[in-house]
Length: 234
Ligand SMILES: Nc1ncnc2c1ncn2[C@@H]1O[C@H](COP(=O)(O)OP(=O)(O)OP(=O)(O)O)[C@@H](O)[C@H]1O
Ligand SMILES: [Mg+2]
Image (cartoon, rainbow, N blue to C red; front, side):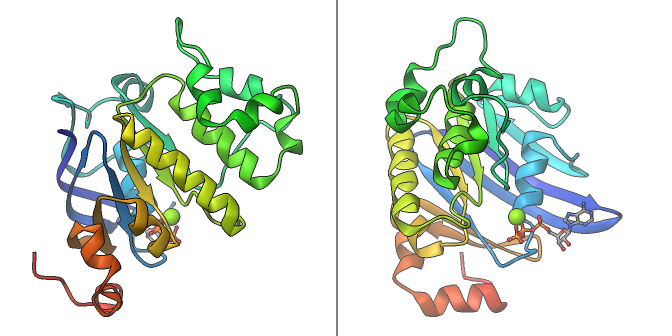
């Protein structure tokens, strides 16, 4: 089921057109992988969906509700969560305090700890003392405690060891299998395509591929052309 629909999205930064007419959807139970070279506009796209920066034009519809005019907190409440690039934890607070920061009344940490039992063992440790992988678990766990319908994760794997990346990918796949819609921005394209359903390639702010992850995964030449310039026939 399509839970998030984005149409004709345009976003400017400092007067420059960064996202030009992008369209994408996210489905419950699926992972949409968003790829593209450095500066393609992946982060800008996610930031405009969560409301960190305003869109110049376009419709963002979450489960039938128009998000475009809402401020970021209201979008989060409507069910879209954003794990931002950079993995920011409150380092002087414990793991558990970090998870409780945005906890809505009536919500609990059970699902977060089910997903990452590692964090339960580290619940009283200051987040600044955690490894990079554990900190990434904290920011992902923090973003699911209020049961979002859509979770967007920006550059989950950067700087992490392959074994940790694979642990995180498994967790993200599990969230999707439980019904969440995920939008995953990833530099490690092959790993993301292996767990993802639908892929989008962004090039200079335009979607130049919208199709199955499997098709892209088995065609490195197509991927190469998309990154370098050619638009796929869609
Ligand atoms: N605050 C800003 N003001 C002006 N331009 C910006 C700003 N942030 C990013 N840009 C520009 O917007 C374009 C898209 O950047 P963005 O960070 O969205 O790309 P990205 O695909 O996420 O790249 P990366 O893979 O490096 O994270 C780039 O040309 C960048 O220089
Ligand atoms: Mg980015």
